[in-house]
Length: 297
Image: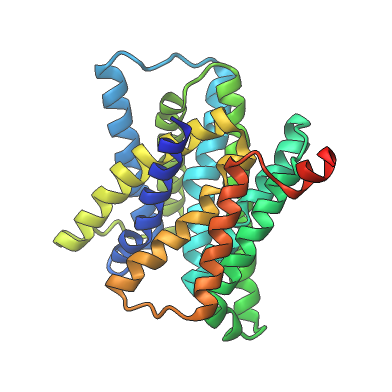
């Protein structure tokens, strides 16, 4: 079951980058994010009410959902979209893949969870692979003010995503299932975005084109309802550190889609990077690692 959820998350989130690209243009970024999570939250609530699986929340549960909504369905997306204004999206993906290490560190700080050497090694190997995959973009960057701002926002978005993972873990430890916490959290996140847009005077435009509406529906249903539910279920079943390795692998799927849709050019260095990412993925799920072998010896 874990493998199914894992690869489902990788496939869905690996293909959402194209849909996100289709959202840019007529509608302001915060408004597009609001549309996405308002729709996803309403769909989740409808499904839970129809199946009578919506769990009641106490005051603490609502507080955790508010925090999760702010971190997972508001701040991190604002940071990532803003970062892409100054640095390439590939570089943003590289920074986001560091969520594996963020989650391991945060799990240690929040829950006292021991950081497994194999998980740290897998994250470092996978992150190195992504650096090679995106080396042309990385090499083309100069340490300008805009670049530093982009990196800063990408790092802040990744930290916000990781913090949301910890809040989801707290919810699941209290017996609240991911679908219920996601339903409330998405609407809380959408409410914050709505309030922010009203205060900032952001116009609520809507693009009725097939491209925009199709992208919105894909991001809201598969990308949010299914993707986040599968991922946060993994957080509860596998722990934040191992579940976050999805963030290392899904940019590889995005590159595969980009090869067909955008003409991405593979190089020997890129193939080496892909090999490192796959090896890191193997380390996460296999029982073998250099550390266990050394201990046995």
